[in-house]
Length: 429
Image (cartoon, rainbow, N blue to C red; front, side, top):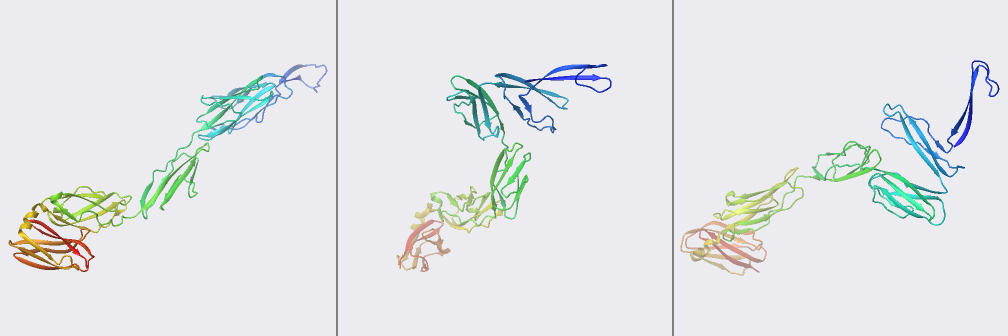
């Protein structure tokens, strides 16, 4: 602080002189204390409502005696609610000084800050003790790194064993924005969808470089957007867009091609499991053969216990874009072996020759009049020969030709109201 003098002379007329006798006037002498250790870089300015500004303050301890110096800043404005703010400032001139700093002093949540403690004066090695408010941080390093979760004041004490000094620094933490463009989604071929990042962000940037709040897409791929808030803090969200078509034709149902009601009237079947399918529809013909209990890519058929004969099972898939065509139908032979012993007693069956080259003779003989169905199955339970509603009353001979079929084991089955009778046929030549 420096002492300065000022004289004020006032007279009614004439020329004023700094010294001399003053007639018809007045002379006043003043002593003025000028704060030489404190200065500001900006004395006036304009600030828009809601904005902030920084005023650079310079402390100069050159040629100052040791001690504590205090002053006040008076900040005046045209704010009717707060026309003046008084800001007290203190400068301590000491042979041992401590200055804490943070770089940067304002961060987005999750970012790191480099703290540092600079010591002036003293000698030897220094010991450092860092703490914080809110509590939770402690360190003995000179320049520790921190990741604050909220606005935090960091305190440091430094000592050379003789002298001790303290300082503090504040770090401001800005909240991150929160953006969401939704979950992974699908559209049908030829359609488009609009993703909306939401309003209220300062900037938007999509994966294609566009900077609008929304983005319209019609091509499969990964879409992302990054936004920033008023503090420049970022957040990002992404999703996968799939383009769907009408489902392809499902595979022919897989499952038993021969069902014996006597062994149980529930059988399971399955087809292709496509992604993004809303439902599967199963169809059993004739409807009198039974009921379908569930309609996923797997289905259970509950067979009517009084039904025997041929049935056909097919399936169709549906997604948001439409329905597939029906699958190829699986032909299923439904029998009931409850009365198999009755048919054995009523019908004599012979196969000649067996093994054979695919051509063989079936000889049937009965003492009763009856109607029968003849089926030949391959190893996959697929029917390769059929003769239905054959009238028997005595002796019957029938030649069966499987010469165009693969070598292997075949099953010949005869069905009637009295039950079912089966024999193995070997095609080997």
